[in-house]
Length: 206
Length: 206
DNA sequence: CCGTTTCTCGAACGTCGTTCTATCCTCGAA
DNA sequence: TTCGAGGATAGAACGACGTTCGAGAAACGG
Image (tube, rainbow over all chains, first blue to last red):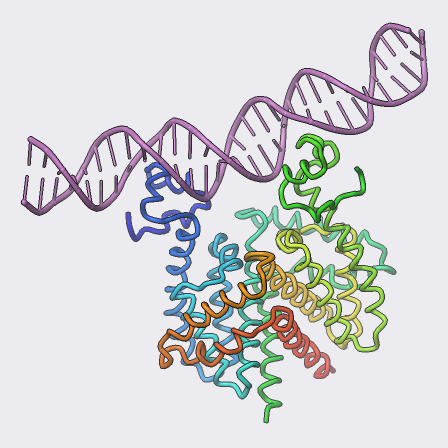
């Protein structure tokens, strides 16, 4: 019962976790000091898997493309586990594997012609963006069937279109885009904008 | 007791709010249906203030600079009220004033030479970044004196430097930057990278 | 066989969001 | 003046959560 930190993928609550493991609530506390440590451990596990992905990604020739792949991998790890996003938000001190992932982002940026400060800001921005968007998209109802999701979307878009087009021209312009948007695609578009800014900074160095 | 939605700036919990208002818990429920509506109302209030700022900002000649100012204003509104960030994260349906703020971002982007899809992605990325970073920086202990904060920072940096420099070159390179970083400055640096990407997309259009 | 350490369980506590009910206050109608 | 209706308030109670605690079972060396 030691390494099985995730049976049913960190079932959100302590009682359900305990119940799912067939044990009492108190048993969990013999292994971990509290919820924080539990999430810490689980996060370190996930980040461990991410590190092996990152090792492979890091060999690519293009640092910008590698950053994109790293960001996507982290994003997908977050959306696959709803608890991860919420945790990464408030996690100040990094556990070992998180550190490694962070370092991976950093090493790609080190291949660019930037000052230390620019590199720090670039990595911070990228990680913040990934974690932020991943967190936003982790919220909201889970496991809704696609058709129901589409129905809700249509409802929202209808509300959007109900606004006065003269006063809300932008809302109307992007209503279609909003209706058919895909989360991951939207995330990548934003990440590409951010990376374009980083590349620009790199190219205009000297 | 109607319009005073924020006495003591939304004191985080219902009981303290009720106590601070000198009333019982139940009284609050006569006015609002639940926590969601309470946060909704409070958010709308804050966004209302933001709209008047945005109206002024929108008159600037440079759309990119305006977006930066809008982002900063939203960011500061979030860091000033810890509950706002957490709420904006999971807020799917926007209340009126949030809609107006969103529209303000959009109208600045409409001044750029982009496709509708690019505009939608640009605004989504900017707002997501601002909300994401604002939310991250809203977490962690509040009201710590500067010296104590600096002490904790020094502790973290010491831990960073304890890593093997050969294996963690980036961590070591940016340790200094990390130690002396300012939240707002870091936020703006990332926002500028994002906006640089947007500007690039605008300039390379046609 | 005992004693210690390792591990398990569930009762109990405090806090939170929420619901429910009893009560008070205020008017206009009779 | 009395009465009742509805606006408004207070607080007890509930369930869920994270956490603490102590009583015990299991394992194991002496």
